[in-house]
Length: 97
Image 1 (tube, rainbow, N blue to C red):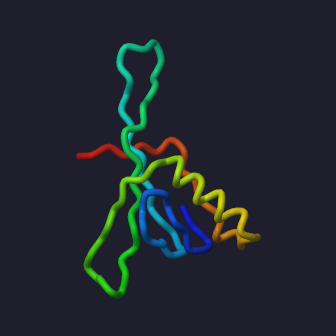
Image 2 (cartoon, rainbow, N blue to C red; image 1 turned 180 degrees about the vertical axis):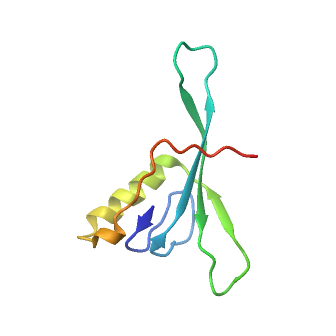
């Protein structure tokens, strides 16, 4: 997803810069139902590499509601060019190896 301006996520004490972020949602299949259903077990956001730490990557576990609220705040901060609108990839499930 892409943020057009810097943002803060609840539970973290720093501001994250505007830009594109990779967000992963890990889900597990709920057994015993007559239809497929999944439960979210983790939501992760991958932070971009910074010039201050060129080889260091960072991934944060985030509350999906806090991430959604930050995205909504970003959308209402003013009109953004089409390239800055969030891109959603529905149906993608990332599972640990």
